[in-house]
Length: 252
Length: 252
Image 1 (cartoon, rainbow over the protein chains, first blue to last red):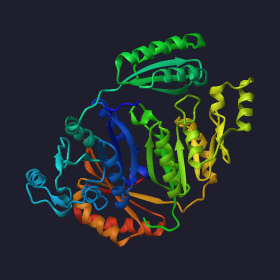
Image 2 (image 1 turned 120 degrees about the vertical axis):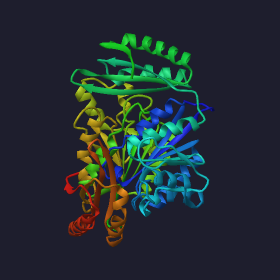
Image 3 (image 1 turned 45 degrees about the vertical axis):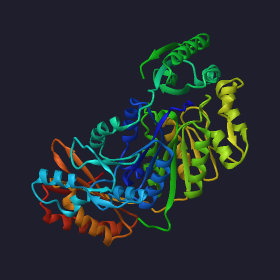
Image 4 (image 1 turned 180 degrees about the vertical axis):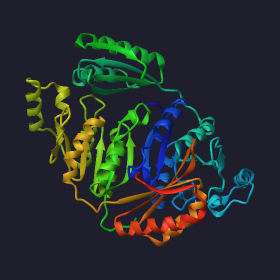
């Protein structure tokens, strides 16, 4: 889907627990859908462990390449929470305790935060805070990088303070045609012809197999609603003679 | 967790549908757990879209860096299935129709495969097949790269032909201590001291918040079972005076 006005983002999931399989990541999926509503495309995602050099290298690569980077994970109070340190190192700036976070902590607990909690008050110099409406200290933004919590409920809450800061793109419209009773290989030629005829659209085919039968969801995506609709019409026409048990537009 | 004998892998999830948020990936989690049983650590994961240059660049980076790379997605019959082409390009070899796959197809359908199906018979020269016990054509291996289907049920079946081909490492043992009623910040100092005392182990803290209360799962991981047990004992001792409502070993 070529588009000069495309706004892009990368997602960096930070944490050994994702790579070990202990935890199933759901943050990428949420962020991708959320950014989609702002017309921002997730162009790449990486999962990296709790290793400073890896985090710094990946972050520097991604922030130079995409309009935005969103990281999740590694901002808690324990020794394996090194994301803030790595972001500061990537930007070549110091990490300082942010007075607003210290004030929030004193306010909440009614006492001076201990050293572990103070770790969570550290923000790279030049960063601004990302509001945490759920639990615990804020995230932060520095340059085009947003640093969010890894716990999904908290990350989701923080995204509401990220969205309004983004340069928005034109929202991608996706339309799905569900075809049952014929295989992808039967639809491949007409789908490819359609893709060639509509270079600004992207077309995907996602097969399914169930007890009730098999088939594929054909998805047409693009930023021009009229062209997407035209292509869906042409697709339905091209599928008509192929002998499917059912061809219909569906929501997802 | 420093270890000279560590065997590493990277996972590459290929597909626009993951980056758009249409599909929640579960392949990384399955592969990470599966490889764990062979003592192989997933050291990094990437999600890339259906763009040839991106796939080729990521694959060449990862296969040079880790012992193994496992890719999922993009090996179906439609125009957006470009993984085999990209793997061949990354290795600088041609893509040829594999006679065993063509034979499987003729056998299954009792007819000559159409051009879309023939796409799925293409394997980079020098590659060997990865058995697909579920549905459709095989995956393949070339060098240290395994190319598997994206559909989770099929990918999972294929992994059973991947595991036995791997150089195995020493399996990582993970032990979890669940602590309720005190926050991570209270446990951070003893956990860090323990991590410093056991450099070959990795220690993670994963907070939880529920209606019933809050706390953290503290996870100690390592390849030496005796040292892991020693560290768990020391951890329980260090946690005893902290006033938790409950401290206990749990399965996950």
